[in-house]
Image (tube, rainbow, N blue to C red; front, side, top):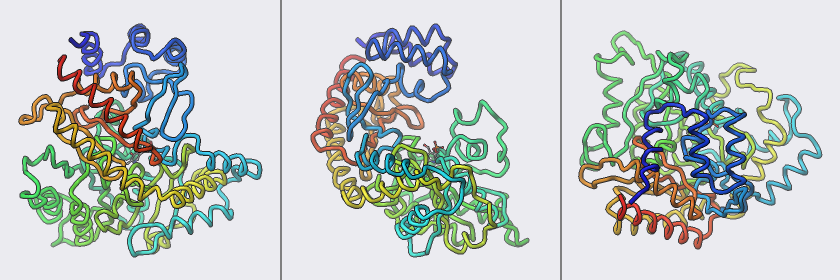
Length: 479
Ligand SMILES: Cc1ncc(COP(=O)(O)O)c(C=O)c1O
């Protein structure tokens, strides 16, 4: 039998109430991975405030001390295979020697000198512009975090089109700062702070989440009904996006993730994004492609939108390009960039020397080690292992993958698809105790998300699958 306290923890979380300090301490005493971990977690609760997402991802989050490649060790010396890559940041592997040398060498010269021009930033802009997807030339605007990049993408779209509205999708995650929180549909991002600044300018519609289609359709018989629904919004007078007879079009951009990250690595049919792009073009609105999570080789191509052969008007990106230091940027088509006023995209630290040097080193590592191709190849290998798991575990309702971007969706019953949320949490905890670290997220909190560093070894993939297999079996036999 699964310990009822495990269930209790899930129930308590379910209520979305903040724990009291006493409750946190009880969970830490029970769940922490060792004595030192306990001590650190308690000090965090004592002094940091428990608003960070670690406390929602894990009962007692692992306290990481160091890493190497795709392996992590916590402060108690426990080893983990990292299937999280720090939310997709550590693509070139933990403690990468080239990144380390770059940081040391660059810091000896300079780390930052206001947001003024410098050669590194010219080199990086040229490199990224040449790597950008699609035939149209793109220019780079430097920012700091993922949220910052999306904020600026939205501001640029509004400025360029002179229009207020943004159409986006349920389940896409675009960050938590005040503006982009409006574009993120998650309850936990926005409902504590309601109303948000851009509340009236954002419309959310269903994403192409085919396993749980919001329209109750089946792919491919649906004929991409969800994309047609988007088009309907532009043509029907029942909506307010556009009023062609009066020459009114209020929409600046359609904003989307090419694959939905935070909501469970959801991979739409390849032609969905190209349909959305066609709609954007037809109704003269921009397409903003948020590749903060899915860019830089993660899905087996440099950019996730390349799977759909789409040339976005604007791209926001971050995470992996900084290899562990904060860095982000926005790419726009040249004519958009050339229409913007001076000093529109600016932050004290944007385009800082150290960040540019690390981003250039990251691109070099990805190229020299063929990490994009490696992601495609190992992703296929990993997905085959997940399909075997699906064949042998009723609990596994759906698996999918695109490069090293994979998902396992757990269900209580394959027919009803009732989400197996408690089971997912318990599988996660038991895998962590057995040295495999991943996140559980998804619309219903029942998806195992897998996106390891792109340098993960085949043997580490095999070991991960073995551990997940064993713990799925345990939960199936005991719950
Ligand atoms: C697609 C996407 N956009 C934007 C963000 C926000 O990035 P940051 O957390 O760096 O602000 C994230 C973060 O996970 C993301 O996944």
